[in-house]
Length: 405
Ligand code: GLY
Image (cartoon, rainbow, N blue to C red; front, side):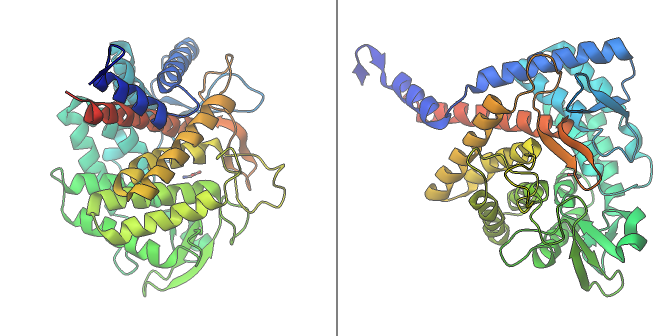
């Protein structure tokens, strides 16, 4: 069919691009991220040539990255290499790839040392995981497999979950598991199906099941921390560490749950996890403010004066772009539109401006500790860029599948 000289395939592509991307231009947003990556590299090279120093945050009054040494207790050290890998994926710029490789290599030591805590997945899968996905380099794979085994040493079979913070057992009164830990299961699933020990799969599934059973309230909002008896496995209590209160819905904790259960469904194809991913998503979406970027904790009594958390919005946008692909038509549309509105808000109203090297402002790291409040934080940038990359791929694949050949 041809209308006014325009082919049917072109019309379908145009209609698909306009219905599926509302309120902002994905390519422009990816270009903006690339320009900030370049700006960051200039700053980092000027300050030092040390590839073990990873961008972590930019305080509300600062303009340049505050960097931290890549050590086993710096949980954010994998996000900057991950940002570089996503930027390389989008730009095919070899200079970015070289930097991605160099920063990634700084984390190799994690595959050769005992586990400090559960954050090994954030550290190694965002860096080496993306590096392997994009290059197929066997050296990357070996590091991921070894680190997945290290992470599994924290698994307690009596409880059925990973001990998230070995250093806090005494303080918290038992075997502790935090919601963030769901994210680190992805590396164990990956290792189990890429040459690693098959028991990694069973441990990851059990962790997700036990967490599903105990770590959520009846409305499907989550505690940040669950404490268990290490011998009997009994659930002892639900607490917060970074949220407003033990009973509040800390925005990033719920974001980790949404992303985590979406990923667990992908890896298991078990419908219990899909159903659960939808439930933990719906309580979050129901309580969002109009611009779809949450307050740092949904129950902070100072709302609407409380700070927002752009990082949670990036994590959830990325998760929903995956989750919508597993859902029936109605939910598919709801989740995809929600993700696009989140990305439009972040792109239009939460950008860092021209001076700062980060992509986004207005994230909250650890409110109760008074740290990283209303700041740029590297993981907000990582998940924002991941979400943009996912959306671009979705738009492209929708155009292809609808095109009349
Ligand atoms: N994983 C720590 C945090 O989300 O702040």
